Amino acid sequence: MIEEHVVDIKTARDDTLVSSIKERMEDISSLKVIFRVINNQNDMSYEPAKLSIGPFHNGKPKLKQMEDHKWKYLAALLNRKPNLEESLDSCVKALRESEHRARNCYGEPINLSSNDFVQIMLLDSCFLIELFLKFSIKGLRRRNDALFTTRGYLFNLRRDMVLLENQIPLFVIQQMFHIVPIPPQCTMSFNELASRYFKNMVPGDFNFLKEKFNQEGYHLLDLVRRCIIPIHPKVIPKDHGYDDHQYSNSNQNSNPNLDYARKLKRAGIKFKKGKYHSLLLDVKFEHGAILIPHLKIHECIEELLKNLIALESHLDDTQQTTSYAFLMRCLIRSEKDVTYLRKRGILSYYEDKEKEIVDMFQKLGDEITAKDFYYLRLIEQVNEYKTTSLHAKFEKFKRSYTKSPLSLTVCVVGILLLVLTFVGVFFSVLAFFLHRRS
Image (spheres, rainbow, N blue to C red):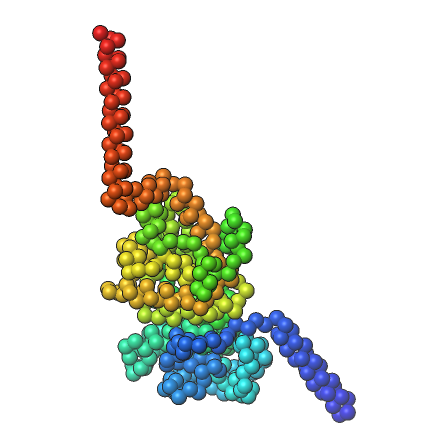
């Protein structure tokens, strides 16, 4: 008995040591990827309207209506296996083991007890799993399920799920997905279920986006980000001094030197819709044309872009979404620019939304900084083309000599004199050869 007691004490000490080492390793290797957004203007683009996911907005009165739905979905998911308590026990044990790692994903300490934190992770992750299952497999839905029968409800939930403050770590959801009883009708991974749910929100071809969704990510918002960023690295500009700048609306001298769309068109720059499988941020300059992938302006595109920009401000990666916002801000400065880009197949939107789109892209550039501007080389290429192409030189000539009636008159007289001189020379040469032949 004494030997067994000693062994038990030693085992407990070893377990404590292993747990301590594991937590230390997680402290060093974990990334902070979920943050509150500094919102000085009380912008509602960062706050959920219907659904709370994670600890930041949990328990707010305006979001309590969804809590009953979440508990119903949790029960529906776990009750697919006869022994409910066994399923719950497995989930809770797994979440206890990963609790420290999950807490480390948040940009600030989470002042919740272990039980409360684990309950939030369990409830929210299982709700998302069950919702995505019901969305893809209609046979799992109940006839009176308000989430599917109420018009616009799913759209509002999608909008809330891509807010930076409203996230739980993706590894927690995937961990639960491999523990909970998944119905036999489902042969898809969690990421594929998520791609089906978000296909109407994320710009791009669904079949291509489905492949992009099947990769690792920090959370749902980060999965969306990985679906629109280019796969090739940033092209370094020829002028390396350019690359050291930070671009912000507050410093006009540091902004990219790029004209608006219609002015570039007059300078001979063409605008074309990006190739079919192009990712949203994969903007290129080829053979005198700026290729911009198609963007559908839907009701929550502004919130999506704002939260992607907020996420990028905390990451060490190149800030592609922030750079895209700056680029579009340069190109779109009036309603005529919006109309022109629509005609080129680059933008699509509901009628009479031109002013709202201008305001949206102008506001997106306010109070943000692109620490690593992605499109520097593109801007260099555009400006080089403007100074070297014959079309651009002809446009510059037209602007220089048609500013006023007097300059236009001088230009016309000069052209007439050149024509008359050429005609005179032609007839003189012709007369000379005719005279020699005679």
